[in-house]
Image 1: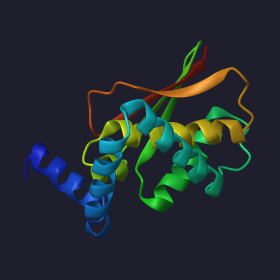
Image 2: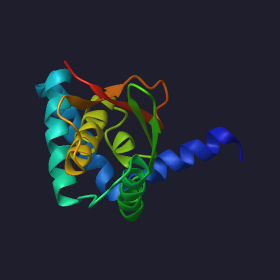
Image 3: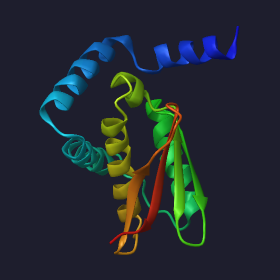
Image 4: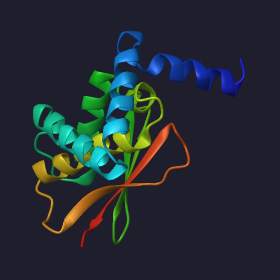
Length: 152
């Protein structure tokens, strides 16, 4: 089986068939009624609500937070995350999100949701004021990129 065939199989099965049609219709309706910025803001609010319902608990280090996030993602079959600490930022990589597949590749909505989740989780563990999570361009539909950095 080729790498392309494996990726196609994965993408086809990453989002349950029972939800795919509903999520795509929802995404199309959102896209028809909301501009990209408003869609991202709405999905970020939904992501923050999701994070409140799925708290990460006490985390003393960035590695603790990454492990807590991945425990939750694994339980929900939502892929996995990697956090990379740099002097001026933390890069967040999220692979295997079924939402990107379910929303038929509408990255604005899927990224907005994950942005809201990660923002809320960092707040839960005591993130300093003046920091925020934002989505970055990825160039890879299977890997979503975010950065935690100073805002403003």
